[in-house]
Length: 110
Length: 117
Image 1 (cartoon, each protein chain N blue to C red):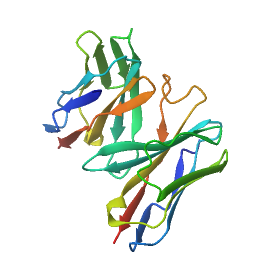
Image 2: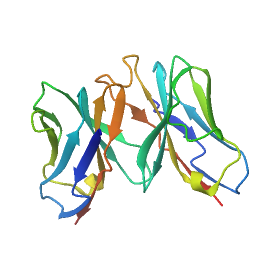
Image 3: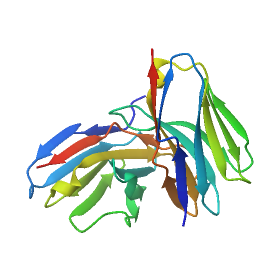
Image 4: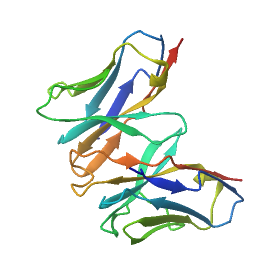
């Protein structure tokens, strides 16, 4: 069964610290992997989209990595800011399906 | 540039009433999607359109749900009759002509929070 699992479910860190969110998938065949940020009360916003051949992609302080062999992706946030508080959702595309993870809720404390 | 615009932002109605949610996609985008988000099930794709034509409605939960796209700049999602279990946040999204499974992102509106009493 195609699945996308994210960890941790929630995370609290202090402003200025770094953090890494995980996404593991059991999806085949694989087309691409997306990370979205969803602020409370808003729609998801695309951060990165990675294809099979891409290992790393950055968007400002956000860096996504992809290991297609182990079917793992991570989203690293550098020097966190209060505005990074949000849910981060991993989405894998396979065979004309978008398979959404449940998300990681990140809280940044001052 | 204006993003995807949804209305209303909030809707509270009684069970059995008809509910209509509205969406204006980003100009020039050929694909439009309707999603439902709940705590229990996360984001679920209900239906999507390409050039105003419904392509995949397999996610529509039951016959009480219907969606239309009469032109490139407007779509509706209707629930009739509504039930308490339909309470959720409904999102509309649009993407470019490369399609939903390409390397192009989907652009989401801010959703309609629907509460059925």
